[in-house]
Length: 296
Image (cartoon, rainbow, N blue to C red; front, side, top):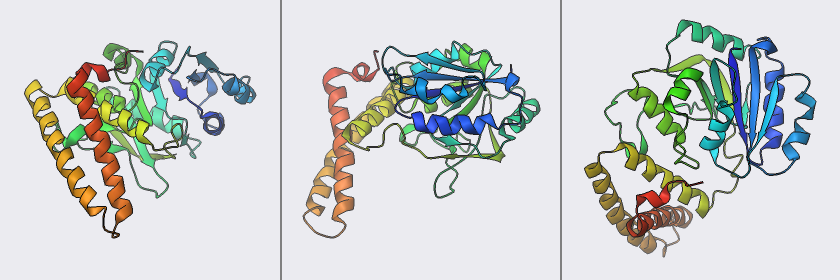
């Protein structure tokens, strides 16, 4: 079997139905791929929604005892995969090209020793959001001028590489686990391969529609966890000191600006972001960076 398509569900059943409909019309024979959905929701909504696909494709639903986050759920799915290549995809990806898997297989044959592969990932503005040229806090970690990581909404890896890496780092609950995975692949000396001839559409934020305090707090936590894992100790301490001072300065400045009506909404957003940043740094100072690691 060539592909194991891995999906994590967290209140995204309607998007998964659409995605499986896209896979159902793929020209690559169904004997060459399987779909594994890990259910991070403790209910029967997903099973009911996917019943129409149970007889038409090789579909497995794996229940999780609780919401274990993205990376751990993907690792659970990968442990049950039979494919030579793992296609990691978000539920809210749309694939309009029925030859997508067939063409992906052709690209694998051209790049047999690839590290991670992806296509263009288009947003609602038709902008390609797939590739990034620095890691967290704008650091390249020595990979200047290179693609540092691919957006985690669509990643293809050889199963042997995924398992050699130990899969996603389970210390990340959500966010930055894709950055971490790509960095570790690059450290293995493997190439990140972008296929510009192929594209998918990514809606984004489907499992977390509310961009609230908890979302940004978790996101900033993950950014610092990545930095702590991969930055030299001295650089990490300097980063923490610099951002702590910067947060204090920015909050004072934006609070003064908020007294004026011009751009008040934008100013309030800046206050919100820097407040979250300051709160995460305060947690690190009080409890240590290890307190941000996901313990499960």
